[in-house]
Length: 277
Length: 304
Image (cartoon, rainbow over all chains, first blue to last red; front, side):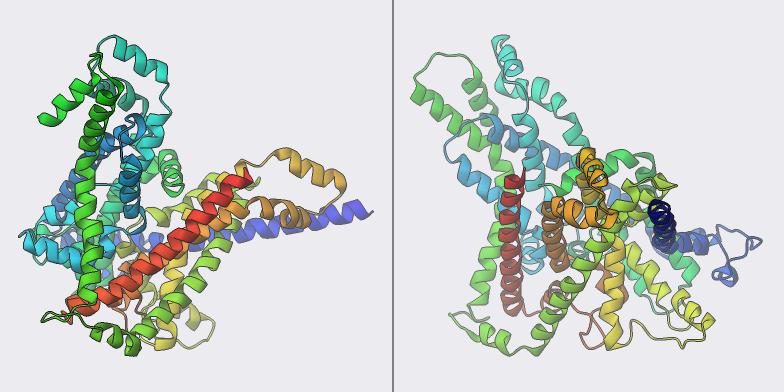
């Protein structure tokens, strides 16, 4: 008697919990679903959720012409890829040294690197802006990217990956006459591939989303990334309908969202790796 | 060029003394590390040193405590710092609790697991600017979905972002919405690493699901909780994108946070010496949190 009672209770609780989960999921998706809806409908239908409301791409066309989103796109892609490539090269070299070369002072050097994990360069906006002004780089993509060319996080991840490479492989390559740098290229880099993929996803997502530092260091549309463009677009007082703002928002998030849907598993895993540092 | 040749020389199996080899290693090691170190020195270490110098010198030169005094008397700073503490004190526990619930749901035998996981995690990949501009619409007085929903239930609308009492809470909601899915992933990893025998044992002992959760699952997830907590606290001092789009710190600094205030002092009031003092406050806060994180990670290792 007691068992059937308790199973009935558990069943009810389970159903309740499932309902709560679904409600929560819908609430979590609602803002995004709404943005998609508004971006694909005319201003009259942006809040009238009827299935027969006419669909349109006009908002995308209007938004695209209302601000130089084409330029912003090119800037963001150049910025994100530029940062990633330099980060990968510099971090690979540094991580290789930390993992395999017992050089004097490596402890001090590693601590200096780790400082960047705690104090990100985009927190030091005032001083870094001064530096960029002195270098004459204000209003350039280089100024946005330069502080991120070194990545303590990448160095840390790659150092772990390189340390896990079996010593025998390294020694075998040495006996075959491979120089140290050639061994890095032939032995270490291929074996650390999953780490590279994970870091690349996190780096691209992080720098695609950057806002504060680019706002500080750029003044002209020619050097601005998408996020700054959207912030300015959203900040306009007049002339922007919600449908148009939604379309602009969708324009910004589409590539990341599509990439996320395609590489879901890798994304989740790399974010997990990114957190465990 | 010289860099590669040094390393090549180090690798060639030329028989040399141990001391010579150590010297080659040291030169080669520093050469490999140098490019990254130069960037970190220029844009992380040097700015901190520069902040220290600026904080204690007058704009026309000479050592001064003027800025420090200004800081002590600055009511806006106090407000902004309290805002930041409130922001952390609410968003951190709230997103942790929601993240844990999400992880438990997604880890259990629920229908549509994959869809739920996707729904919870999606906000994490959106740029905060984009998320904020969507939410800006949700909060629009009388016209936005939230007020419309209130009207349906016969409740009056409200200017969520324009009222001092609700501006910061409204931003906190967006933060929780954006972050919970990210923390869910860590809890999910923790849950999946748990031995299934534990639940079996509890069932055999006749313990209720709630008892098992409170006495077994929750304590075992403690290291994850501590870790997520420090990550969330650090983030709460570094994120300002939503403020840019949604309130610009207003009304009357009611929704301003420390980093946003630094931005305003440095780039609206152009007071770089005072901005330097504020930057030091932020750096000190981040270092303190990092120290906590370090302790947590140490403890996490002991757990294993």
